[in-house]
Image (cartoon, rainbow, N blue to C red; front, side, top):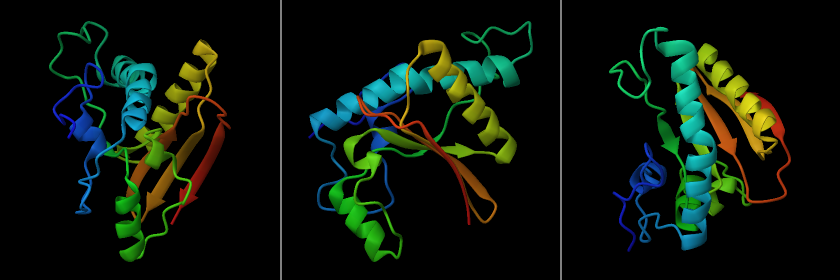
Amino acid sequence: MLDRTKNLSEHFSLGELTKTSYKTDDNNEPPLEAVENLIHLCEDWLEELRYLYNVLYVLRPSEDYFTSKEVEPLVINQGFRSYQVMLAMKRAGLNPSKTSNHMRGCAVDIRCAGVEQALRYMVIILDIADQKNQDFDELFLERRGCVYWLHFAARPKDNRRKICFIMK
């Protein structure tokens, strides 16, 4: 069993990226390859997204990101999903993809306070991709009712740079 308190990067833990509301026999335990993919997501994308969002939109010019108490965390709703979690979601009436990037540890759903924050996150991710000349697989702004989140996926290879708005 993996240590869920283990940090994948400075601000993100394994527990945070494997939490789920679906109780399964496997406790949503990721294989090592999925953990490696989660580390890549955190180190190469999420840390920079968190930093840039705070510098651009939260902190005043006189505040330092590394010492300010005003820094907003990046809240992950879901990260890795095991096959058993996907089955539980299906039983609950949801329609998870059989080829979901979540199952390989390549995707996260990021909580957004509203559409404005979601759009800002999207722009930052696009800028990171362009500046690093690094592609992502999926960047979806999703809404169900008045709840917004950003689905973001980056795979080790064969990324499609697919951008979509899903409003239900």
